[in-house]
Length: 400
Length: 223
Ligand SMILES: Nc1ncnc2c1ncn2[C@@H]1O[C@H](COP(=O)(O)OP(=O)(O)OP(=O)(O)O)[C@@H](O)[C@H]1O
Ligand SMILES: [Mg+2]
Image (cartoon, protein in one colour):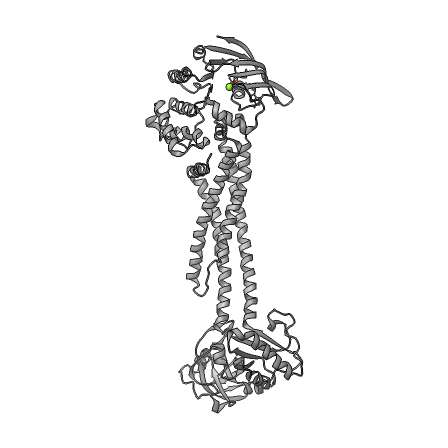
């Protein structure tokens, strides 16, 4: 029997047993759709994070005091003791490097903000005006630390805080208290919402010296640096480290991380996550495979007389086996293609429902889902097909 | 030419051995018309199955057209069946989901014949068996006589040397059964060996050679 005759013959069988075929195809399709939708979700999350990183600048280098314990991991989590402070003077030296375009020292803490009869705790960032270009933040009104007034007691309010304390919109020039210190409002941040788990609408910004006095510290929390060129990030990182080691008497006691490194870590974690959910979804494909096997076994016993007839007219066992395998292949292939379409409709609906989430399945997931579906289908067809091929013709013919 | 020598077929039923064929010696020449009669369980179907290579004897030797086919592999036997044997059954054994034309086409597909040629051959055969206007009907939409005609058309489309019919009229009324027998006899007239198992004495005596079976043995052989 020629291949295309085999395929046509088995295809005709599928169309003759409509309900049966439909149910199997549906089971297969749901398995494939699950793989595609879940990987779209996983990969969408990964892309979302990557995009978020990109939105806070890609030339970013971050210096923090202390050595990270484990290379490659996210250093903030495993900060050891700080043997030596990272000072404003250190920051100034780093700022003089040729590879550095701009830098912003950063101190962070919490303090009580009171004004206009209201009181609440806010996150305080002590920094310089350079923070705005580096973190891609913008001022909606006023300014911050223009050269003439550097170091004076001025404060920029996050959009939400400004709205809360001064709902009438008269914000600039107002006097506020942060703990027991007085500040004059010189600016309001443009509303930006959440980026990287940090809500810039809910912070206040004061000059870094004021912050160090407020929190009674000499050490910076972070030093944010923007490299001059994206291609020079490694060189910049090296130069920064050397400068700081020299200033710290040869002690390598700071951690310099690039955003690329952090990004790579997140990327790795989320890719693994995607693979994990894909693996879980593949289980549903295996279940569909078992269904195919079951239905094919039923088909063999239902069509026993027909198999006997095929043998009587001289069909070799190998051909009978091929016919049943082709049937299983059709079932799983049709199911896989239907599942592919369903999966992409599902991903589309995810994207419509959560526009921020770029829920596209990765390319490999498309191929893997279809390949695994057809493979399990054919493997599941192997046993029933072999059973059909081995039937004794006389007994098969006598079965009604 | 069919030559069976000392053929036995034994079925083991628990600890009891049933000798369905008990040391059978039989020669049937090409072009003969043979009927096989005998009581139920005497081994008629088993004999036909052995001749048609659907069943293997436990002992003895079977020569078909001079070739020893006793110990052929399954695949080789399938090929011999395809080329030399046509089976006709009491219950027709049509594939229910295929049309009359598609049922008749089945043996041609097995040979790998190209579709255009198949179509031609099927049409010829449909016409020859007066089934031209039933080509697209499924078995369920055909009468018993028509079904058996489709089955005969399918069995003969590859021009086998021997037609083996196991009670071909068993499910048909007398008149239609007679017509079907006439059809088979026509095929015999043009040279096909015809072996018919039947319970119907009236039909059985129409054969040129009549075998009587009893307890797995050939008890009578009249010409
Ligand atoms: N697969 C089998 N297993 C066990 N015994 C069998 C089998 N096939 C046939 N037999 C036995 O072999 C003997 C001959 O059977 P066979 O079918 O050849 O009889 P038959 O002459 O065709 O009968 P009938 O006229 O009823 O069709 C019977 O006793 C039957 O019970
Ligand atoms: Mg019988």
